[in-house]
Image (tube, rainbow, N blue to C red):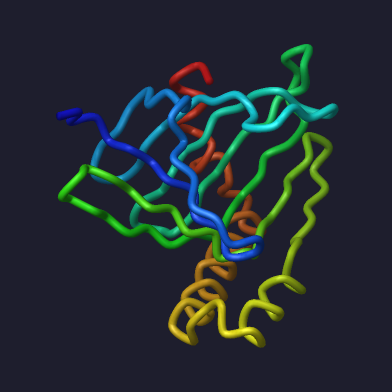
Length: 160
């Protein structure tokens, strides 16, 4: 039996749950998990990246890199974590609201329309919606207070 943590990405729109079998876990502790990865499907704008799953905050902070290795942007997912101890799995449910931070300082909050659609269609519970909005607010507050470097730090210290 494999004792290594298995990470699954669960999406609500479109509905899917995929084992991230090729992601490499670089470090893990009680607070976060660091991974590096290549895109699941070929993209023209980026090819690989790394992520920090903040297990207590409900964020996943990722660096997306262009094919030449330069930073395209930071992508911040609002997520829900579910542990499945029987097979050492972590289900990471994407709660749809995301923030993109560009190297030039621009910030975009995206996919709030999908969040509304998920609520309308009953794909997300009221508790998940409430958690999503609180976690989104916490992340925006961190960014506005110029404290995002604290979330970047584990990835930067690991050389990712």
